Image (spheres, rainbow, N blue to C red):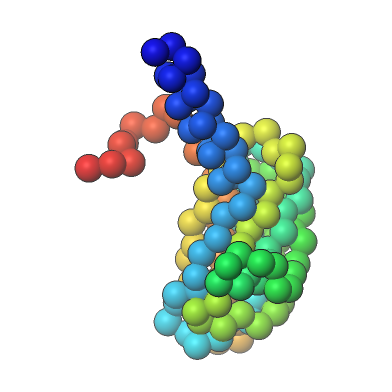
Length: 133
């Protein structure tokens, strides 16, 4: 029984570590096309790089939107590039990133730029809300 519990715990930790490195979403905003991607650091880690890529349906990298350098909490980095609604986008974190993270996405419409804002935040085990109902 102890081996089974250990195996299940190990599997959950491995899945969480793998999920932290490869996060993806489908662009859903109101605009047909966006011309800027902005990454905002909401993690406890300072000074790191991440990458945003365009993905195929089977999660193969089709192209790179850009490499982003973030230098502390609430720091942001942006790159100009065309992203269509319905495209699958992935965020790649460094292999040695210190904490598990998740992403949340916001779409902003300005007169010149239509922006996809990706917030990268810590996912810690002491969350006061449950992920299930």
